[in-house]
Length: 455
Image (cartoon, rainbow, N blue to C red; front, top):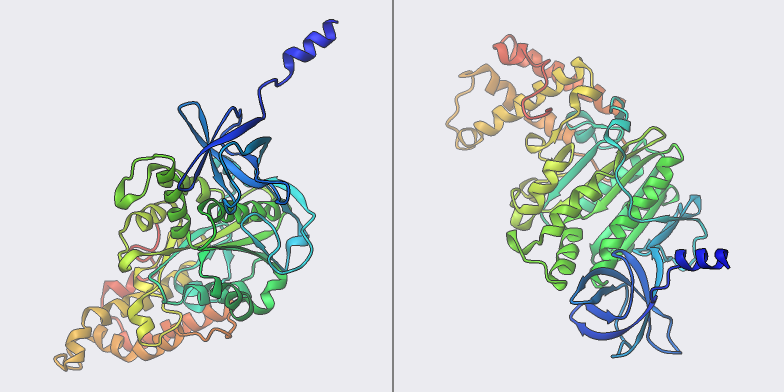
């Protein structure tokens, strides 16, 4: 008898079932249900339909607030809701390589479901002191980045650009040419038309060592949010197996917009530009999960769709403050058919001093300074107001403009290694040094880390 009483005392006697009492916008309200925030519940919409998955997102006035992970068709007052007692989990493992799945991990490529190791999509970031320092350079296969905005193994870099400037093409180049073992690519809030284009045109043969997680713009907000967490969980699985993973997410802005939809739906107050406080709380929790770990690494590349090309809009500003560097894509360069449209002078790698040699930094510093000199005097040069011979540095900047632009341009199918990029960069620096001569301390100090590049 005592054993039975002990079992009853430890049993969960609260109801795991409730009923729908209200549907307002994106939120389903249920009563009589005991569930935790983040728990997956099932809404039983009818005998002929599969139960609809929903996630608990909050509570209000004794009711449980749920967000559906699918369409609400068939939900009616009194519909039964049951709790599963589990958070959302996704199958992980090598079976995912070469696959395209949705935000919940279900296949989109018409192949069999993935039977992998279940893993919760929500996890804490690695402990700060358990992260090894980043000292190794990762080749991305893009000359402009490898030479002038270098990326370390486990670094997190944001790619900031307006719409139609070449973010997807740049990600495809990196996926095909990087020296990482595995690519995990999250397409969050993309147009449906663009998914197949990206997989077949931009990704191409690299699909065999990649996992693509996709949630298009027509999917419920919670599915778009889940896509970001699902991709991160898959990357964490491969990292824990000792692999070097590149996690690419396009885009963090659409993740933030989906989080804003959820926040507004459950009654959060809008703050800056309508973004709710939960958006700015969610960003570091997502982005800090990338990085180094004792067994492997996740190098994070996150695109940020800047609103009206405003680099200081709230999401861009918040993401830039979290990440370890940023690459800016310029609409002006794209209009000049300069691809990839990387604005080197606005791009920053905070770990350049950790992953490059002094000689590399000297060459990069000289090239950057020549680009800055030309930009400062571009208007004078364009109208013919600058007289050749007036300033040796400006003369060198004019002479080196075309070689530097040729170096920065790269066709989408052109492969480049770190060694190729460094060799070409040092060649440019040697050519420029011959034209500049001993023109002052700015060149003598080029071995220092360029201002704005590290720190």
